Amino acid sequence: MANPDQLEIYNIALNTCGEEEVSSLIETSKPARLCNRFWEPTLRSLIRDYVWNELTAQVVLDANSEKPLFDHEYSYDLPSDFMRAMNVEDNEVYKIIGAKLYTDDGFTPTINGITFAFVDSDPDTITDSAGGFIRAGFKAGDTITIQGSTSNDGEYTIDSVVAGTITLDAGDSLTVEAAGSSVTISASEDDIRVKFQYIMFSEDTTLFSSLFIELLYYSLASKLLIPLTGGDPKLTTYIENKLSILKSRAFSINALDNEPNSPSSSWIDVRR
Image 1: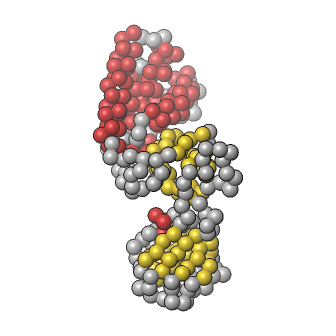
Image 2 (image 1 turned 180 degrees about the vertical axis):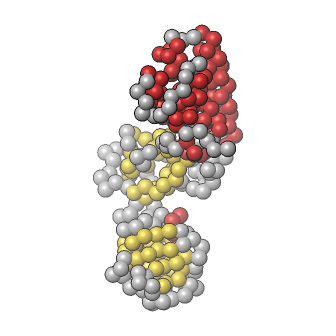
Image 3 (image 1 turned 45 degrees about the horizontal axis):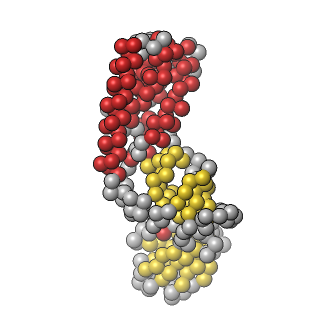
C-alpha cells in the first residue's frame, strides 16, 4: 500500500480534529492555510527529534580551504538538507557549529590493488572490478596520480566517477592495460575529505515509514486543534495520548535499530 501524500496527510490530520477535508494544497480555506503553515515546522521537528533510518544519508564532504580559528583542524560545509549528525567515519570527535562540521581529521582519497584496468575508450576510463572508487572518496574534478602501472603512471583529471569506473577528461589518454599489476591511485594532497552520515530533511512522503507517517499526522493534528476547534478537551487528550505512545515507540525503535552504530561504525553499516 502506497504512503499517503502531503494532501492526504493534511486530511487525515483534519479528520482527526473532526474537520472537513481540503481539496488541494493551494486551497485558501482556513484549514488549508493552517495545514500549510504548520507543515514544514512540524516535519522538521519530527525529523530532528528522532533517528529515522529511512532518512539516513551518506556523503563525502570536502574540507574548506580556510582553517577554523581554533579547536579543530578542518571545517566542512554541511549538506543543504542536513538535520542531524549521525557520525563521521573513523572520527569520534567532531562538532557541529552553525552550518559547518568541524573535525581534527580528514583523508585524501587513495586506493590500491590489483583490480584496476585501463581502457582506451575516448573518453578513457579506469575500471575497478572491486567497485571501490566511490567508497575511496574520489569525485569529479579530482586530479589523480597513478603509480605502479605498466604504462599509465602519471597525473590525470576525473570527469566523472561511479563505484567501478573513473572516466577521465577528454584530453587525458591511457594505454590499454589489463588488471593484475599492483597499482595505487591517489588524489591531490590538498583534497581533504570526510565521510559523513546524517539525517536529512525531505518532504517526499514515499520515503517515510508507517510510524513516521502516523507521528506526522497526529503531530500536525495537535497543531491544528486549537485554531480550528478551540482546543476540544476530549480530542486534546486523545491526540496527546496517541502522540505519547507513538513517541515512545519511536525512541524504542531508535535504540534497537541504532545501538550497534557508534560514531566509529562502518560507513556502510546502516539499514536504509
